[in-house]
Every structure is written in structure tokens, then in C-alpha cells.
Length: 312
Image (cartoon, rainbow, N blue to C red; front, top):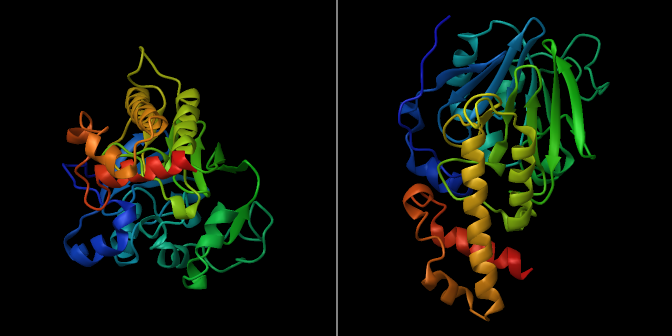
């Protein structure tokens, strides 16, 4: 089995997807494969991280990066499994997570006789694309071949695939109103989507129903789900929407940073400060070296999103 590992990599913020894609030469991007644990692998290229679960039932993929990288993504998947791609789960509607939906779906095949969920819309038409219903609603202006084919409305959708239970958990009003966390129970791996990233401030898409408190609620949920070994190292492993493979300590650090900045801005709002005054006060200044360098999602943009979220 051929495996390559992650080197230093500059991840692209999903908010700046259109501009970043225009400025980046995706032809030069390599897709790297990292074994996580159990049946689960992490793929890194451009845009979102991709989670791949493999086994005797076939392949399940979480998120799809950009369409122009699909051939490289599929080739990377084939280094760990030759089985059919059965499911593609979207954790959000963002184009750097869903751009490759159509080609990855076409490369797969639905489970014979219909799919586990009992849906028939996509029978014999490639892999099934699973997402919260709000993801489908927000993808209405994109080609229909890229739309989710199986959506859910409640708090959770469950699958049993490749010998393990998989929980797709909706986290409302976080990064957007359609975010999902994907928990591989036997492998003990969580794919977080953009509720958690390690290389930038949390991205709050206000226009798509996101909120700062929803992000914090999502991070709290992740902390509750993770079971560590020896304090914080090991145990449940976490694949973030963007950034490095993580564990409990990384999620706690992100949560504490987010809560501290929220509280600072909330206090400034209570004092009657305007948005421009809050930006000038630089409430993120001590965290900017760690989280403020990703193109397209600056500290000022994060502060503005937090401010407007709290004012609402």
C-alpha cells in the first residue's frame, strides 16, 4: 500500500474559495494520504481536508475539495482501497468541500438494490451524497449532479458501513446552518468540517446562518465526544475542516481562544463601542500569530463576524 505523509502546507480559507481558486495553480497541488486509525485516512490537497473510510463494503468519503482535483483525489483513494465508492458526505455547502461532488459521485456506485437509507433518487447513479437538508437548499444554484441525493432534517443520521457505526450529527447555526460532524465510532475518529480548524480563526458565515455561539457550542460538543488517552494525547483523533490531524488538546485550545475573543468583543459591545472601535482595539492580537495568517479570512474579518453575530 502506497502512503505519503503531510508536509507543511498552506490551506485555503473556504470563505475566499472563489478568489483563492483563481489565484492558485491547482495543477501543481499534490494530494497526500495520512493513515489516521482504524479504517480511516485523511487526504490533504487544496481546500478542505477529506476523510476516507475503507473496508469490505467499499469506500466512504467525507467532503470533496475542488472538481479540478478529483482525478488526483480518486487516485489517492485507490492507493488505500480498490473498492467502490458508496457514500460521499458533505459537512457543509462550501465550494471547497463540495466542488468535487459530481466527479467523485460518478466514480462510485450505489449499493445494489437501493441504499441503506431506502432512498431511490440516486439508485444506480453513482455514489450517494449525504448531507443535512440545509446544504441542499444552499446548493440550489449549482449543477444538480452535484447536489446531495440523501438529506436529513433532524439532529442526526446514522449509517452502519464497513463494520462500524457512523453518526452524522447536525450542529446548527455554527459555521453555517447546515454543518455536520461525522463520527466513526469503532475507528474512534471524528471529521469536524469547518466547525473546527487549526490554521485559522473559526469561519462564521453569517449569510448562511452561522454564529459565534453556534461555533462554541460545536466545539463544546466535540470536547464532550472525545475520549483521550494519558490526559490529552491520543485516544479519539480529530480531522479538522482545514489544518493538521488533531486530538483533544487542539480542540480545547481552539475552544478557549474562541471563547476568550467572544467575551472580549461582548464586553466591548456592552461598553457601546462601534465595530471600527472594536477592530482598532485588536481583541485578537495575542492570537494573530497562530490564527491570523490564512488568506481570505483575516483577524479583522473574524472580529467583524463575531461582532455582528453578537449584535444580532
